[in-house]
Length: 125
Image (cartoon, rainbow, N blue to C red; front, side):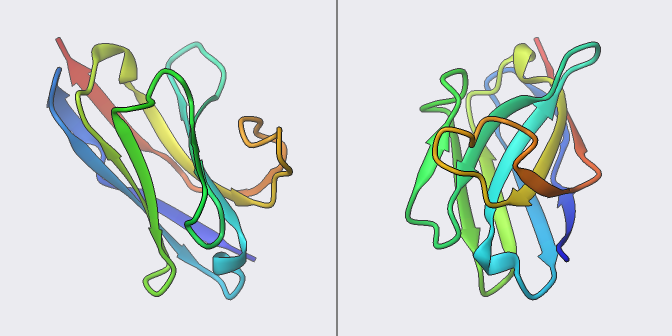
């Protein structure tokens, strides 16, 4: 079992930065891929970024590539999402999720078994 808690969301102006954290508990955290997803009102979950269990491999949605950076510290059981150059269209509830998605499925929600409760990010124009 893995329990996930997101934090770090808030209100920021366009062009600003936020760093989200995903704190995990559970012995198997370090063996899981961690993904960040977001959901805007009235929309489906959208993949944002993913990092493998060791931190050696990352993958980003085109919409955030070059602006967001995902990283993890397994000693602290925490994954981070550094978000720079934020835009109003980045406004959403951001979720972290843990699982073992196969190559080609990182962007899908079903391979992730554990989800946090989400943290709101609002970017004003």
